[in-house]
Image 1 (cartoon, rainbow, N blue to C red):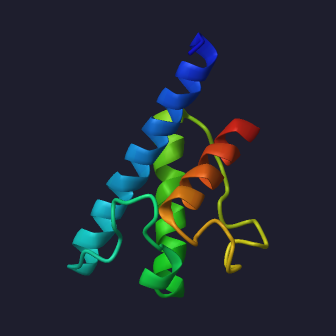
Image 2: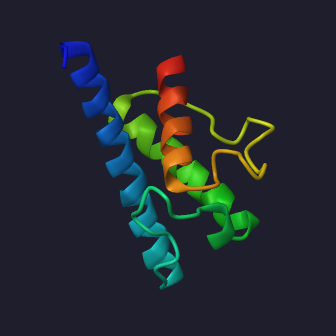
Length: 103
């Protein structure tokens, strides 16, 4: 594995850990374990619309704090589509990672 691929992998792992930290915070607030730390676990089905907005806003804030990078996850029209970025944790990770790399 070359250095660039290693750094990409390391960065993606950092983003996943950040998402999981946000999941823990939201689960604590909801007194639930609805959001699972599993790449195949659904995201959109576990939250109401306010919960989704809160989740995405918390991820945006965490990305800004950790990477000094302002992103907008809520601005995409396909966010709520069946095959959109909230269908599972892996899709949310890929979506968030892509938004960071756009900057």
